[in-house]
Image 1 (cartoon, each protein chain N blue to C red):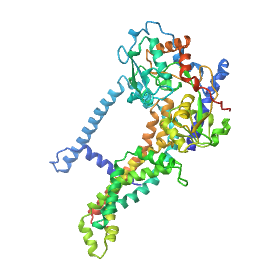
Image 2 (image 1 turned 45 degrees about the horizontal axis):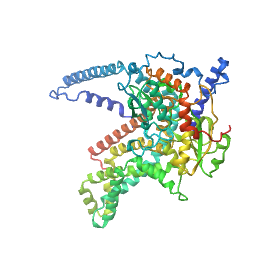
Image 3 (image 1 turned 120 degrees about the vertical axis):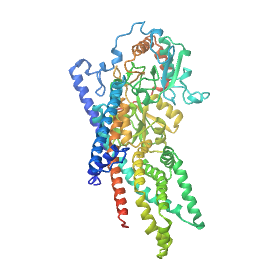
Image 4 (image 1 turned 90 degrees about the horizontal axis):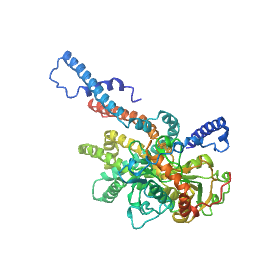
Length: 298
Length: 315
């Protein structure tokens, strides 16, 4: 969906990339066009030379046949793909559930930290402490503490299955990061906005709810997607608790065959879902920028 | 996850089919070779010609470090394969350097046959993944209960077996699984195993339970999961099962072991060497010599004899 307008936009971006560093002295249209063609030709030629030499060095190195067999075994690639995809279903469930919780909890924490005045000190303190602690803790530690620790308490009614603990771990860790992203967004909104809102008769909460947060969120969509992609990859943490997800599936084949190609399957799956997300972010940002440039306040 | 196990099942079925047709072509091996194992000829190192004494002379060996035999194993190294050493903080659970424990004793015995004294042996830590990564290895040979598999042997050299291993099931005392006598009794339970182990294969192919197995990074984590009842039972090799029930989780019990398969295709531990290593025929000759003069039997008896008896799980 996001890619619909991406075609021409992309090629222009590539041409810009190729032409970077070109002195913009001549503004005559024909000569600038000639220069563009020249830049593209040079960029293509130097790329061919650079990647050609790099490839030649790799392919002709003494260890290449062994490395190729270990990482690029076509037969293993195709045979492990179905299991890899089946394992990925668990990861999708994990990040889909966790992301919703993270966005809500992160916003809550950011708003707590942004509350002004001495009366809200305890809330600010708690939010700050939470963010400090959960950003610092290694994920492995948290997932073991929750996933093995809580069931270890043997409290009746609490789940034994590791999946909810994986969701909880990811939510705790990522909401700390995401709350800081939100906070940066909230603080980037000029104070005059709040002043204007208050002067219109909105109270502090309404100003936050209707004026500041909507602007803040729109500004932080790219870094939020950044964290979302990070979250997707961190779902492999659940494998520490024995859940057979995408990474563990690959690891099982890796150990059974002494071959690393199954990890290539994993990489491919993540690339396939990450790149469309990145383009979607670009498109959202572009739309936002254009919207603002045309003076719309939507 | 159900799809995963079904896929694995499919692959296993395909392998079995291939093995069966292979066996049908050569009737002489069809009775001896179990369906899941490839024909005996797949254990390539065994088939390689015995080396001349010269090629395996201490001076003519190409070693990682000249004059030293560098042996790799994982750390932590566990009993009964290695023996604990509270004095060496680097190898707390099992210290390969003291010659105690089954694999440490085997390593020094192989070194001795190759002509290396105890002082001429150095140990390096080799995590499981590193034992088969491409490129130059940091060890001359590696041993850490790595089971022979013909597919694995495409990536590294794997020596002849030095121990034929049985897989076993461990459960919590008094749990329903603890009283299971047959494979059929075990179908309904959730099992766990360490990733990359033949124990995992045992769950998938031999037990084939209705619940997808849980797979952990290390046996410690499997034990932890059993402790907090996230799994009903775990599968490990029998000597490790004795360590788990004896030291790690006293509240657990060995439910039983899977019947031993004999012959060249039985599951066995192999030394891992660089693919095409000139040392491979030499360590095979050393293992053969240790078998012939009874040293290997004696080492096995010393470290594992009390760790070999457990009720046999009926199919």
